[in-house]
Structures are given as structure tokens and as C-alpha cells.
Image (cartoon, rainbow, N blue to C red; front, side, top):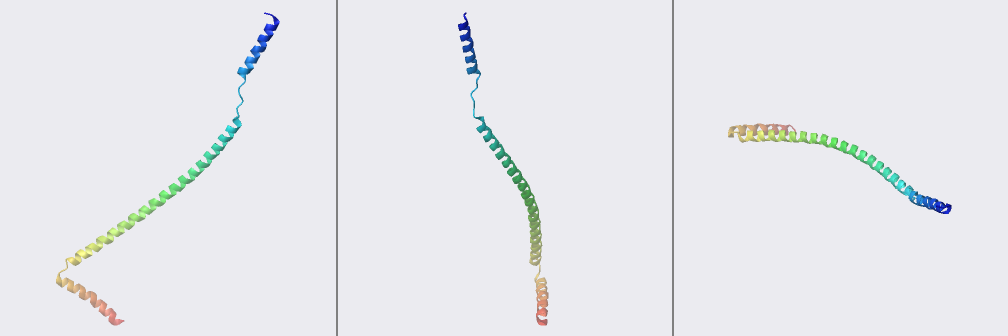
Length: 117
């Protein structure tokens, strides 16, 4: 091989090497900016999520407290209904003499109070 052939072979080899070895330049700056924006948005959403979870826990506690209050009211209503039913049942069981005595005493007090005024 002569010098010209060797020189051409070297130049060709170098040219092929640079063509193959040269990576195409990508505009990765734009993608990095988008990634940074998305990461920031994720952080904001995580903060919002934490805030909403805290509020959710507070509301669940409030609901539990209201449930206790409601249950207490239901128990009171049940007690009142039971007492009223016992009184109604007691009146149903009164005989004629007992009813007469009951109303006489009741209205006797009312008549006394009206006559005083």
C-alpha cells in the first residue's frame, strides 16, 4: 500500500468514527424545564393533599362527636317515650273511682289557684 492509500484509509476511518461516535444533540433543556415544573406541581399537590387529609381528620372527629350527641338525644327521646307510655298505660288501668279522684284533685288545685288570683 502506498502512502496515499494509507492516508485515505486513515481519513476515511476518522470520518466514519466521527460520524458514528457523534451523538445527535437533543434539546434536553426544554425537557428538564418541563420535569422541574411537573415536580413543582407534584409538591404543590402533595401539600394540598396533606391539608385535605388534616381537614378530613378534623371533620371525622367532629362527626364522631355529633354521633355521640345524637345517640344521647335518641336515648333521652326513648326514655321520655317510655315514661309517657307508662303514664298512659297507668291511666288506662285506672278504675272509675281512681279516675274521678285523679280529676277531682287535679281540678281542685286549679280551682284553688284561680280563686286566689
